[in-house]
Amino acid sequence: MSCHKGCHNVINSFTDTIDFARIHNALDIVADHGVDVSKERVQLKSLQHELFKLRQMKQFAVKFSTTLLSHY
Picture 1 (cartoon, rainbow, N blue to C red):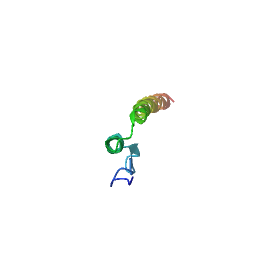
Picture 2 (picture 1 turned 180 degrees about the vertical axis):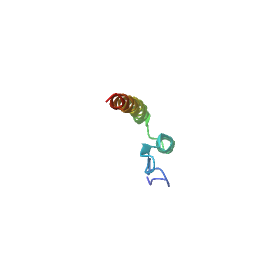
Picture 3 (picture 1 turned 120 degrees about the vertical axis):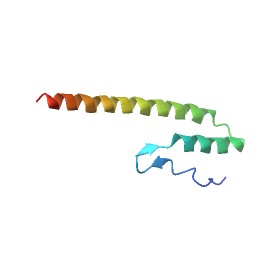
Picture 4 (picture 1 turned 30 degrees about the horizontal axis):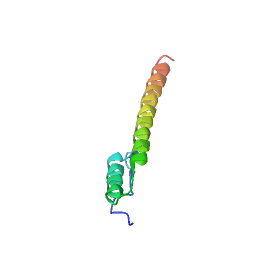
């Protein structure tokens, strides 16, 4: 099975983020060929959730360090 145009470049090089919509579309294409992708969809949702939590922690760390540095 060949990859349809655009189903692989899922990382936006400008923002260094993952294009989850493109991954979902690729999974839809694979599913249309009769392949069960339910496990991959669950893993993708888990990955999205983990990345969201990491972004929140990064924002907190930046805010905390900025606040700390402003006191010294």
